[in-house]
Every structure is written in C-alpha cells, then in structure tokens.
Length: 261
Image (tube, rainbow, N blue to C red; front, side):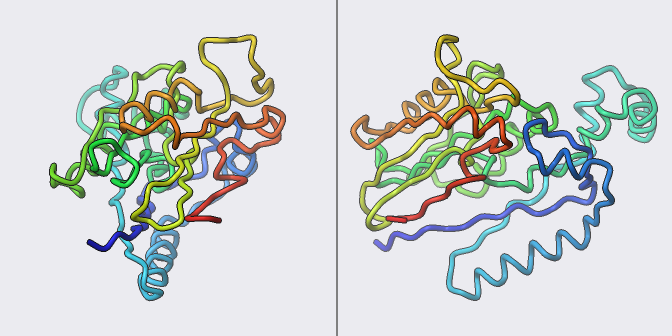
C-alpha cells in the first residue's frame, strides 16, 4: 500500500473581517479595523491549492463554517428572526457579533491534531479536533470541525475520530499549530513533537507574562493518549515563554517540519 501525505487548506468565508480578535497575535492586532476582501482572499486560497495540486501533491479543501453563527448568538440571549438576532447583536454587543462572523476556521493548522497510522497502536489515522478555548471566536468551531472531519474521512476501518478535549483552559488545545511529525518515510513510524506553552496544573513552571500560552502540556499529553502513541516516539517541548510574549503565539509561527526537515 502506498503511503502519502495529504495537504488540506481552509477556504476564506464571506464574513472574513479584521476585528483584532486574537490577543497575542501581533499581526492580528496591528491590522484591526482594516478593510478585508473575502472574495479576493478566497480566490487567492483556491489558486494556492491549485498550484500545490499541479505540483503533484494530494490537495484537499475544508469548506468554511457557517457564519455569522446565529446559533451561538441565540445562546447568548439574542432572539427573533435571524435578521433581528444579527441586528441586535451588532448594536448591543459589536465585539461578540464580530467574533460570531469570524472566518478563522480557514486556518486549518488549528483544526485538529492528526496522527498517521504508522504511529498509532491500532494502525488507524487518528483525529482530535482542537478545542481552541483561548479565544471565543475560535471556540465556536470544534463541533463542526469534528463533523467535517468525520464526513471527509468516513471509513472506520482506517480512521478514528475523537471528541475535542474538555472546554476549559486546563486543556487548551490548538491542534496541529503546535504539533510536528518527523520521519524518514511517510509509511514508517515517526516522532511526534508536541510543543506547549505552559503547565496547567503546576504554576511553579515557567509561563509567559504578557500574552497567553494557548497550548498546555496536559492537552498535548491527552491527545497523545487518545491517539495511542508510544511514549518512546513522543517528545514534549515547552516553547520559550519570552518568545510567546514577543508574539509567537503558536510553534508553527516560528517552526514547521516535514519528514527529516
């Protein structure tokens, strides 16, 4: 059987906006209130995907999630028709309204952690959607992300899907943004590298002081257990707290890996 790596991109949604929702992301904050061009951005993303497919990569796309998230606004007490819900939220709670319009599910590095079959105890590909508890606009995503992944990889003989981790800061999980896999060949067992920002249950350990550490050690360890990874093939590394305070809010902002690179 041939083993290969597939690349999946997200697609920018029509309500994409620069609202400065991501404290700790210096670029996000510096572009707050700038004008966005969702249609242009979506086309750029599609061209990028087409370019990778033309290079011979296995390329997929995850559809954007439904935004504005009217259901979440209703949970917060806005009522009436969908139009009334949106109008009331925009007037009474504009920050919440902008969060519920966010198209941030386009960032698929935050969608889930994926472990290939060569690494797992049962020989299946394992998926755990990220709970993204650190930011409200992203915490709206995990359930739908899990449904999308189950629909896309729907053969239980090959794929195993897990529910996202508990929705609290102790198990803050940001998915593949803090996960790298190193190997010699895709079909051979590799080393899964989990980078975390802080210890959730031990406040004596180093932690950033300016910006939040979004990934916890405990979350990374839980994902490794769920995926049936061997302890000898897993490495946990704490990101330098000073670097997080400089704006490196995820490991993938400063480092990525593939095979032996």
